Length: 411
Image (cartoon, rainbow, N blue to C red; front, side):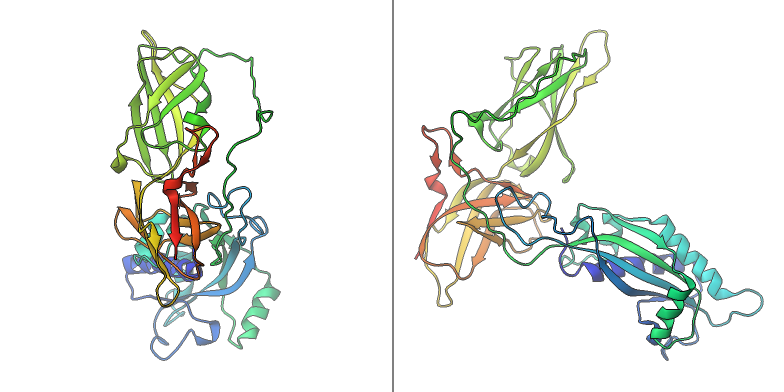
């Protein structure tokens, strides 16, 4: 997700792409981002110049009133995203547009070719232009697309007349969509402990059998909402038998792929696999699972993918009884597994409040949260990483109950 600096991040990235192109071509062309009436100031009034002017913003109708992907769960209340389309005017200036060529026209063609070749701003483009960690535009899941906009002659004249500047031939572009996250906290009610006995959920049945290995469901232990490291998962399907069976786990967002062997007790319809308790090789988040089967005389066949979530585990809370300071603030430190990468989004859920963790520069299993405006009471604590919550409900006991080890007292 992106923060409020994303508009500036888009402009800076576009300017960086253009400046790199002109530096490669040579000629001392300067790329600026000034209003139309301030472009030709005294410092560069006689040189070659390309100006990228943000002249308009508009709410993206497709993302309007949408919740934050992977962060707002059913039953939670959060301020919707601010989805923006950005509109830029690309204009070129030169020292001389006379014989032997109109230089500004050549500059305009080069600039338009850069934006045409970079029709999608990749995370690599953004990181190259903005190495500072205060900009998180490269973490946005939705791609940023650059599309040429055809302005009518009247629209162009009106734009230039507004700035009382002489008209110059220009090209307009739309960059969409920039998803800016709200700064307001999310209300997160406690989860339901159990369903009623007659609530069996949805049932899906298919009689279209295939010779290919096919997955139908992933069973998590104790009817948990998410798996944890060390858990044994049961993968249900058919045609899952073979001389060699490998289970593939993939987290596309964090570019993680793990291959695990199945446990010995397996059948053509059920495979058991244990997630190793190796905190350094996994991250909390959403994964897909697939099964690769090798049979004698056949090529390797891979099944379809099913999704599940891997929850973080809170190993310790320091302190368990926290006293507020003179400003009414409390600091809590959570020890967790698996480790948390710098690019992951982390939040502490204290009761029904969400407290976002400060930025990190290294991978760590120790997270510190500064909490303001908290009243003295007992609170259940959850850790949310990349949209997946730690398991608060203990389903190993009957009836299920909240895990008392995830409770803190504020005094």
